[in-house]
Length: 145
Image (cartoon, rainbow, N blue to C red; front, side, top):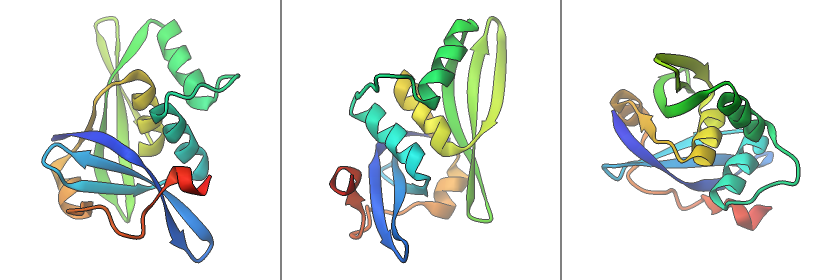
């Protein structure tokens, strides 16, 4: 399993206009693009930029609920890729219990960025979906907002 940084949010031109992509960079330098929804892209992008909305967004709400229940997010693990769909888990600590929650990678990453917790990617996922460098057609998300 590799630690990955959230490298950024990008947009890729497609037949419908653009598709948002969150890009992770594994500790060995490999790039992992994950296509996500626009709402999740905005949530991740704003968290990376330390922008706070006047009212809590969904991921802010989730973070607050976890905290108020006395739990904490330990890490995010992106652990599988099946039929071009990525799978992830939020790993929480609640007292002396570890709780694993199945979640979409985009939601998990949005939470991880807000809490500054590590994101891990299983090697088999990197081996199947990584790139050596950022594709040329990836445009920074700021430029399409």
